Length: 410
Image (cartoon, rainbow, N blue to C red):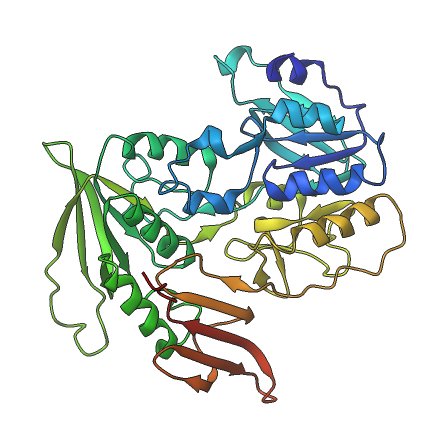
């Protein structure tokens, strides 16, 4: 049965659990519920085909010569059959009515909107797992710039890069941008990494730590342009992309005109952070922030709207976005118990260890690291740097450990 047929046959009388989003978070919730209840009706709604894959692998797959198909662990249809759920693939959620507890849908495969049947399904419990989306500033037009936040776009980029060595500019040197820069370099491509800050991971770690990361990145042969912002990306007459960038103005040189410089590349990848679309949270009446996501009650992961939960990249706890894979199983188990009315001890949110996947340098952080604050050095040698972030009570709230890579004897 095609998604369009499934839509037209779904009625407002349908009840049960509805999950919006078929990423790792949505599938984890299904796994957790099915572990304790094999029969309760579950409907999974996703704008793509619902295939199961491990998204963190996207920043490592190009150098491993893996395409999108190689990363798929199970197709959406096969996974849905195995889990005994109703999968509405290639389907957009257009509205949520928390009063009537209904969700309005439309097939994303429609050939002509005039002849498309809209559908409304009801829910007893609703789980928002729709993730977050890459930020595209006006200077990064979406029709010219790639992202690697979804397997479909990754697959399209991977096909383009498979034709031979190319020059790629990555805008944004957070964890994802820094990881994919090394992956592309290992695959034989020329890489330029551009960031507003003077070093990679500068929004997370203090300058003493990020300086080591910048040095390691540059030592590999990655061209790192720190302290620059991209002002425009255009396609030239030869089909290449022209990236215009300029130094970030400081207080001392704000009156000095900055002359943009240009870089000619084959591809541009946006890695400038994530945002959560406000359409569905606003419709559902849940407390929400575009940067950090949907606010939930930490022990239950309930939103402030009855019978609606949130999990994964679209969720925040205590004002901090939850965009790491490690806690998803525990979060999903809590939601499953709460939905099924089972006793549980409540979700105990512990920030996971953050580990940069780059081989050029080992970077591990625990707690909730942030660039500003009272960072204190515990250990500092050429091979290792360990720093603690102290809160107002002089308690350790985060720790970062940076080590030089171990070079095996040949």
